[in-house]
Length: 541
Ligand SMILES: [Zn+2]
Image 1: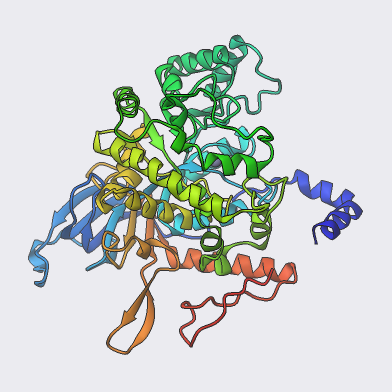
Image 2: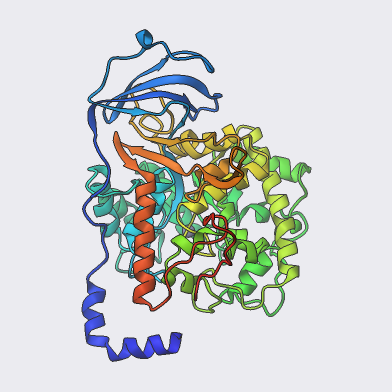
């Protein structure tokens, strides 16, 4: 298939070139109603994002894009007395008994486009995010910086259906020349600041260059984050980079290295090659056990130092989930309905595609990864318990990790690590807003803040699965039928109300059209979505 596709591409080269120059952009907004002069959400149960328990019924009044009043209007289990309620609005949503949360902050987003390896439109990415309540994304590397700034401005003006964007371009991106000296690094930081970036995403560099870049970023008021790539981690681990002023880190590489006691270099097999991704991800799964054990002196000291530096962790657990159970992550029921054929193709074992490292993934690899997760989760949970900031990032578009759905999986993984569901929501909202310096505007439901909400019919604390676009399975005891409950009902961003289910229907249409175009049979309904008896899950390619 691939070879045929390549030949076809070659034959069609002149036309393809013309298409390639036409960079994929988000279409003008065609969804969402509002903002309203006065929008009233009636009778919901509020989870405000600060760690406080649910309270309700409440009425919430929004004027344009701002929350102006949150009023308790009764008690659970008894009717609401109308005389206590705020005045009518020019638009009202009856959310009685539903749960209202702040809009979610995704700290690790990539806006893939038709030109990315994933072959998806950015509209598809945005709609999956918005349908899962993500109203803010920290972009840590998309196509060009100008493209990102353009989309950021259009999202801020609500001209497109997309989360608010916080720009963290990749270090060195779009500079037009390599960064070889500390002065180059400083110049690039100023260049990106002028473009309107809020921060920088690093992968590591030589210490002189990193130190200069971090210093300049501090002077320019930019925040920073880093994926401590193994190529650079011996020269700067997470504790070292944090001490030079890095404000947050992605994933987890660099943490075990800061915790090494009996080595400096990870135990690489002697035929290891970083560009062989089965080597890279397989050996990563054996890394945490080489670090100082949980609650040892070294482990405690590194953790306490990072917390004292106000350092933020964005673990992106979900990005590695397939490593501990490839079959499960690759067969999640949402793939059949929502994964684009091109994305599916990108995930499959491929020595050239990032994150498609299943050349021969074994029981041994999965067992090691499960142990890796146990040690990693112990660190993350304790970091939170000692007052450290842990945020949610999804890093979707790789490794069977689908936009939107992966973010909710990340919530489940924090729960597995030991977070109370309220702590999960807190991390997903206010802590994320703090880490990007937007907590005065977003992150909690509070008078004066922007009107960003996620509204869901079921209680997400009881079952985080109700936030998945495919909802959660529930047996209806009244009629004996298996039903799907939940799925975000409305996502509200800047006071604009989006029907989350309509966004998902739109995405399904895109997937069906792409399948038709690729000559793949229409998406069959997976088992438990279709209620008329079991169906074998079959995605067709
Ligand atoms: Zn990433």
